[in-house]
Length: 344
Image (tube, rainbow, N blue to C red; front, side, top):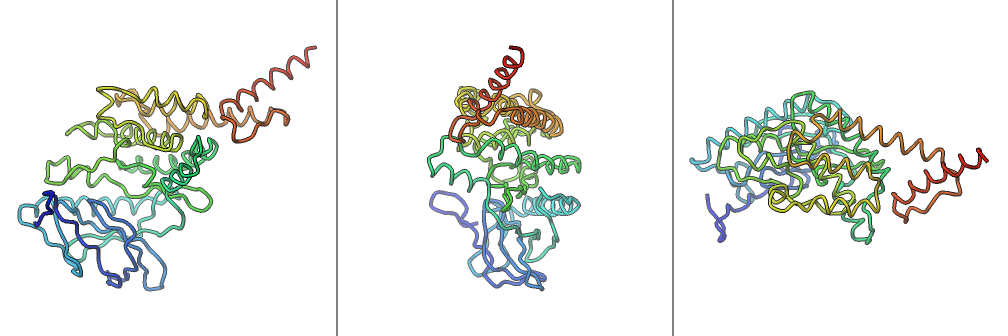
């Protein structure tokens, strides 16, 4: 395979606009990474769909204007292995029907690779929302009630994924899409590429800095729901701080996460900050071991906040610009003052 001056494999070209794949026509490229391309396409009825194409850049290359990628002989075995895992992942995801999980409509082989057809949704990624808030210079990125609502729905979907014995392994703001009503969709599962890396192939690791759990950095590390839960915690942190937490493989040397979390206590409730810290535990066994357990704690916290808010007098309401912890404290103080009034 030809290489760039830096010694890295040259990037593959996307499929040309107008290319026909089975019963779909490519409209444009939506995204690309080291493992795949994602396209906007239309079906025979003119309905939009998203199509994900398996094409790892470290194992294959496609020249501009071509359809079939070139796979060097030394990469052929790893390419076929990844193709198999990608196909099996698509087949497994097609069995999951949940509003918070990207809907897989079809998957097929063509052009020497595999394509996964998914429902196309309008909206923006969570990452885009965070970047917008950061550009506005806000001290906190997203309001706590929005964070709680989004992640409660997201975890409903992730529970379904885990029930089907699947892991996502690449949860991050860029892989969470928010519809116009702020309901989330989890996209771009990374289990197939993680399995390929674990097999010791030439496939290059693609950890997302700050969002990958410690066990993903270790060959043979025990993966499970707790691995996705670390990424949930990192994504929650990004929604609050506007940037990822410290990379997991650096925290063993000098852990800055506790100090990073403490800075958030001025703007978010203690319960939410502590929950994020729990998810970000370096030891897998110290994290929530299931999404159900994590979701239960999040729901109990949210219910307590709602209950406190309904008891608060209107005069105690503060503007949204005030730190949330201060607003919650004022609510409880208001409750104590009413108790004293009744006993007087």
